[in-house]
Image (tube, rainbow, N blue to C red):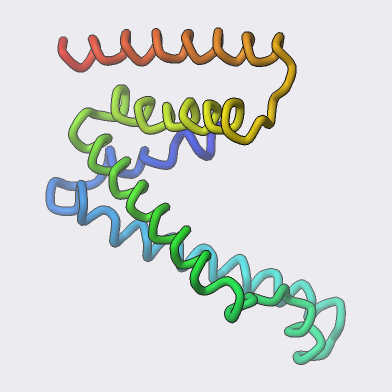
Length: 149
């Protein structure tokens, strides 16, 4: 959608000094600030309902640190590595080619879902997905010619 498709748009306006890998730091700081603000908004919403500080705090979801520190940390690390790779590809190839290539990762996810996890069992739906994947690959190939021009 519009939100996910424009995630790299601020890089277009970044200076040479703040572009590429150094953009990752500002991206991380911005994500941390927005996440904190959303949690505060949620807390204030609960506080408005409960009118008590502790009750509002207890209504917030638990972080489950004891259970989630390893899988959550590993997922965050992998996501950060992928995000860094996407920033490098967009910086090197441009938004018109780099970002569609990054989004092509959904093809890999689809293949895993269909053939490994057996999430789709209808032959017709698998064929439709494969036709869509071929269409996506054709679009990616056409976009790669744009970069060469």
